[in-house]
Image 1 (tube, rainbow, N blue to C red):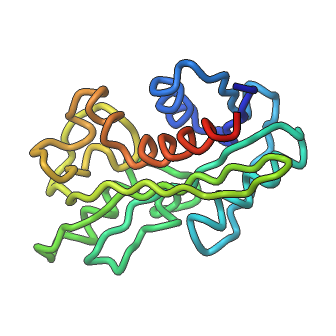
Image 2 (cartoon, rainbow, N blue to C red; image 1 turned 180 degrees about the vertical axis):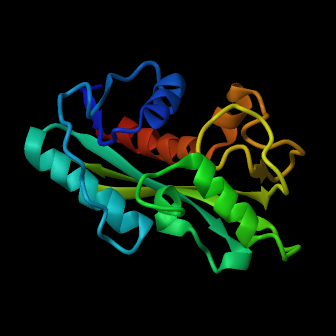
Amino acid sequence: MKELIFATHNQNKVEEVKAVFKEHNIKSLADVSYHNEIDETAKTFEGNALLKAKHIYEVFKTPVFADDSGLEVAALDGAPGIYSARYAGAEKNHKKNNAKLLGALAQTTNRKAQFKTVIAYVDANTEICFEGIVKGEIATALSGTGGFGYDPLFIPEGYSETFGALPREIKLKLSHRSRAINALFEHLKYLT
């Protein structure tokens, strides 16, 4: 497998992907000394993932994948959605995002939610997207110190603990990002 660039500055995401796909040579934007932010100006997960992947492919001419991920909460009409990282402000503060979410759900019993990731892959001949979804619900309080973002609030279907409290191996197996990445790497097997 050729080198792949993962178009992200988020080291938590990079570590998740590298933990699952140890046999692939995955480079982050930091690894390739690309430090600029890529503005996510699209209105969908797919649009933002493609925007990032295409931009980095144009810079490096190396196969690249990018993701856009977020939490969609039923009682909030799918919010925070594509604004998940910036839900409580531009500084992307996980604690503030979680506090805002708990406040927004304080008066409802409908706590259904899903994590969604869209991975866009771009090379000289291909532009393709893969989706991963994990359904669950939002806890009434933070639980656990594992993971990042909304993990201490998200309880995946079939479990009683949040992603933040579950062992890392279980989260990696269940996660929306792992599901989308698995689909990407299944596709890449046919290209080699």
